[in-house]
Length: 405
Image (cartoon, rainbow, N blue to C red):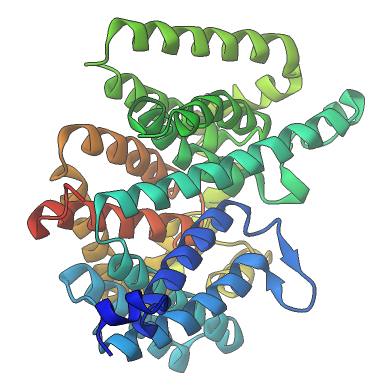
């Protein structure tokens, strides 16, 4: 039965049904990523994992119905090559069980990377995914404010002065929020819907203040860099837009001065002293331990997921790498680092090759993220891999003639 005849009969052909369902499931999946560690389904893990499993089923049905093949490109091959090498490294891993868990995660990330590239084939669809991420980050920022209001300031001063949604790691949560900021600024000016422009505008102060409340020094530095990028994004804006941006900045500054506790600012202002001492909250000690193992096995590494086990052997404390690049290098060796580095290089080339406004927004996202990854183990998290895929997807659109969709 032809697609036209099926539409006349009031029915959609299966391939169209699967494709539509897969797309909207992908949008929901992306919206859930900022809240991955918050939305938990008992006995099944995070809601993002459940949605991802459903998405995989629908994508499989769609590809089978339409006879599609996975999109091929250098970036895709690098992503899958890195995941495959991580899986192979289990054979010599210092901690095989942790290696299995990490390798499976990398395979899932490579699959997510491929799915995004397969379905984000128009500018409208990429915009929908980016806006979905902003909305998810906005929800998390509201959760941070709720937690902040529920905390006694005296208790906050006696604790680690850090606020996050439902106890999520403040460093990762802060970087997750910062990643959405440039796109909130982008859509506040350029989204087709006035309602979405207003939502994006409201997201800017919410994400900014929630990031500060996490008291994450890494996220604070990333926020400052993203702020410079957002100023760059506004360079050719109209005077009215610049005036509105000034009002938002003033409002954020006034709220931050009046409501954010001094202990939070004191912690954030120790960033410079940590850099001067080359301490970085004892991260350097863990890095030195990782380097010792890298020197013993530079090409194949110690096996994915083994950094904490290796650090315990050297400094008697299990510490994660707190550095995405060093973690990849130590665990998967030069071979794995080259594959991961090639993927990052593809993303950088794509971001630089975008049209002006998109280039500014993407660089304002990727540069702070890349800096944050120097002090956070984010190579096995969904957020950077999602934006890697979106940068590639945006870059491919003009080449495929899809920019006007």
